[in-house]
Image (tube, rainbow over all chains, first blue to last red; front, side, top):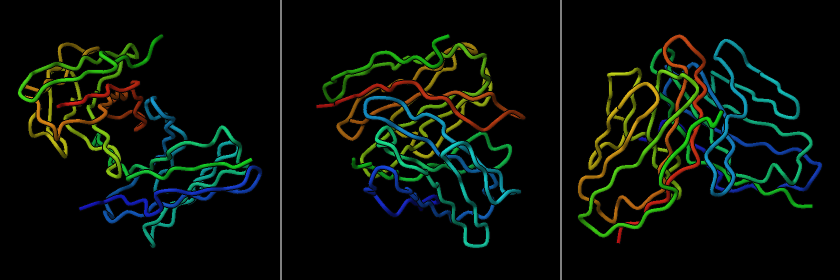
Length: 112
Length: 114
C-alpha cells in the first residue's frame, strides 16, 4: 500500500522554464511534508518542507504547495537550472512518529 | 563536521554470507534510520532508533538486524545475505522527538549479493 505516490517517474524541462513535480498521499494523518533531492552516487539532501497548517512555503527558487483537500503537494522550481537535474523524492510524516514515508521519486532532467 | 558517514561504500557478497554495515553521525542527533533504495520503489525504511537504547522495525525489516551501539553509531547486519537484498543502503539521522523532522543522509552503501 503506497501511502505516498509520485506518479511521474521522469520529467524533462528546458533551462529557464518552470519545473513542477507532483506528489499525492493517501493517509490523512500526515501533517508534515518534505522534498529531498538526490544526485547519483550520493545520499538524498533535504530541500524544503511544509507543515499542514500552511498551504505554501517558499525558499529562493523552490516553492512547495500543499492542497490538503486533494491530498496533493507539488514542488515548483523557477527558473530551472542544469544543476537541478536530479531525482526528487517527496516524503510525509505524522507529528511525533519520528518516521518518514517516501514516494518513488521523479527524475528531473533540465535541458540546455 | 562530517555529518553522516557510512562504511563500506561498496560490497559484494555471496548468498549466505553475513556482513555489518556501519553508520555514524556527529550531529548529536537522537534518532537514526536505515533505508534501502531499489529502482521504482523509493526509499523504504528497514529499522530505526528513535533514541539511544531503542530500536523498532520499519516497513521491510525481514532479513536484517540492527544495533544502536551508542548515540553516534547505528549498525545494520545481514546474517545470511540473499540476492533480494541487493540494493543501495542509506543511513540517516534526525534531531528526534520535539525537533525538526528533517533527516540527514549518508552517502550510501551499494551492496550486491550474488
